[in-house]
Image (cartoon, rainbow, N blue to C red; front, top):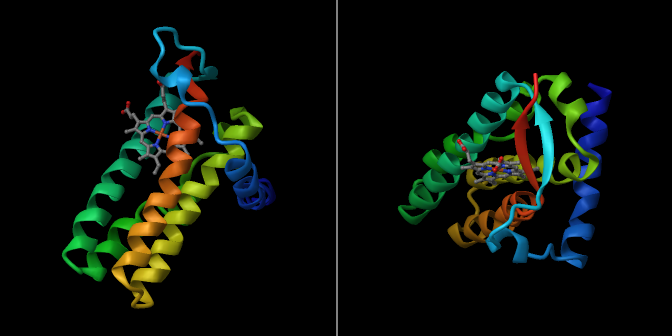
Length: 152
Ligand code: HEC
């Protein structure tokens, strides 16, 4: 648990890092894949990727619900990928993740958690849109740096 809290704190600090050093996108579009490999087991990969699909799913639902002004649906979609999802990831996986990954990751979960608060707190839809746009910079940054490969 302490490790998780520590990583969340690190995640907050990385905001500065992300805004100062915008990760170069060139490699993401090149023919070669020079993103750093994170070795995980088959099961861990399945779990990590299912969390990723949950992120995409939530992002889409938030966009749609927010456009319709349905704050209850925004809240529900964001809650599924907030702190509760972060806590669900087994400790053993966290220990395999490089420090940069562990710094960027919590920012995505925490970003969704703040959208939960904003939706329940009756914030303007523009606040939600801009927050989602901001938190998705973490998706983009991490995807340009890492990939998963299976090693049992
Ligand atoms: C801390 C790092 C990190 C963050 C943050 C992150 N991702 Fe990912 N994501 C990855 C990695 C690594 C992969 C696997 C890429 C590979 O192996 O080619 C991945 C894969 C995915 C996939 C493919 C899933 C599949 O089934 O193949 C989707 C969709 C995705 N991410 C969506 C998102 C969205 C949306 C966000 C932000 C809300 C996000 N991710 C945030 C690291 C991250």
